[in-house]
Image (cartoon, rainbow, N blue to C red; front, side, top):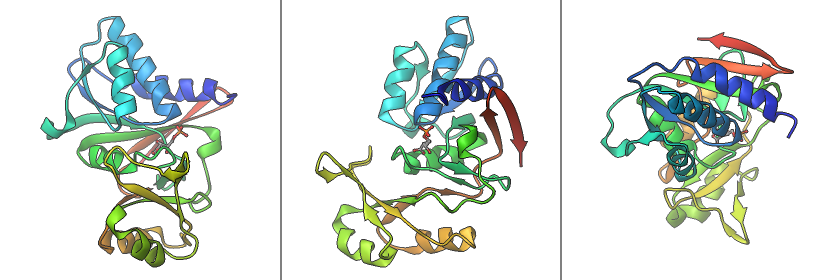
Length: 220
Ligand code: DER
């Protein structure tokens, strides 16, 4: 993937913020993977940190790289979380969830003193809205929720069965008019059976966006 170079550059830029003694939140996806690899390299050189992961996949990779992992269920606060995004705009509004981890990602981000997004240039948009918004739904309520989410919503499938999140739920990839993303997020949060969604409107404190090797830093 030609964007890998930029993903790695963005990952390194965010990992440069990590200091000895920190408790770090590890995101999910191909860009977050680059950050986990960069953190693993610094740990191999003696950086003393502990981490929590936003997915089983990220946890397994981090452990494999020698990063000391804690169970997030036992962790009240995280110092810095580093995670990717599907879209991010200059308001630091982000759409996340293409990797299916947005529920745990939002929970960890909300428990973090600081959360930074890392991305290659293709994720940077003028305003969020083109990408589908992943919505984590309770399988028990599948039919009624698909109706509530509107005709643009599509049940995410994997190997001819509904995609299963790490939480054992399903995902509806929604298509919503995001002229007022705050209103859309508030609406989604009121629907019983909607357990999470990919609109991150308050969680992102900063972003490192690498485009053709040049890393831009955005701050809220
Ligand atoms: O699923 C997620 O939330 C990921 O962070 C996603 O938004 C970005 O994944 P990528 O880095 O592989 O594009």
